Amino acid sequence: MSEKMDIFEPDQAGTPEDKKRLSSDLEFHVTERGKKSGKAPMNPKTRFRFLLLLDGLLVVALVILVFFLSRHLINRSFVDKYEKGVFETKKEEKLKDLNIVEGYLPWYNLGNVEYKNQNYDDAIANYKKALEYHPSNGKECPIRINLALAMIHKINFGAIATDKDRERAINQLLAARAVLCEEGCADADDDFGHSEEAEKLKKDIDDMIDQLKNQQQNQDQNQDQNQDQNQDQQQNQSQSDREKEIQDELEQNRQQNQQERQQTQDQYNNQQDNSSGGGGGSGSGSAGDNENSGKNW
Image (cartoon, rainbow, N blue to C red; front, side):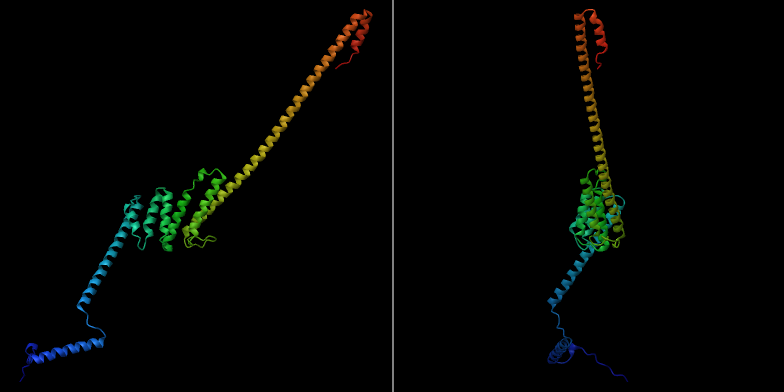
């Protein structure tokens, strides 16, 4: 035979004193359990503030996520159009003021646009600004390579005419070389830089410097040869002029001597004519003898 079990209902359990004692016992057990766990019961206001802080953190995280996603999409759109030859910089210009994490990126992209448009001064300024944000080695070397290329393109090799022009070009090439070697993208002394492209460009720069120096040496040699030739020509011209002067002097002396001889001959002839006229017939023979025995000039 089964027994019926009564259901315990607190509202019907005992007298008011019993209920009060039961409530007191429950509070005592809760307090004792809180003490044993080392945690005090959370105040409702504290709980509200905690939830509010948690919501705020979630909102901030969401904003950051949206920002990076938008930044990535803007850069992706820029790169896609850039590769197609379309250079739109308005959105990229706005990202310059949002320098978070990859702050160098908009400056680098804008530098590439200026480089493509052959605005090398603006490209150099943007690349230098990008380097101020200290990109990692994997990102820094491409910036330095493009910066060095922009510096090289500023040199007008076809307009180098003087030693000063050549010296200015060599200094510009040395500055571009220093940009590559500054952070080890290329090795200043050996070929152990951590960027193969930077090492190749460094070698090209060294070849250009050698060519300019060789041109200067060849030009100096040509100048020396030209000077020697000019000196020889001047000497030959001087000799020719002196020879002409001597010939002129000799010709003048010859003509002068001839005139003097002619004058002497004329005077002698006159004297003979006078003697013949005063001495009669007998003098004619002697005159003819004197004329035949006269001095010839």
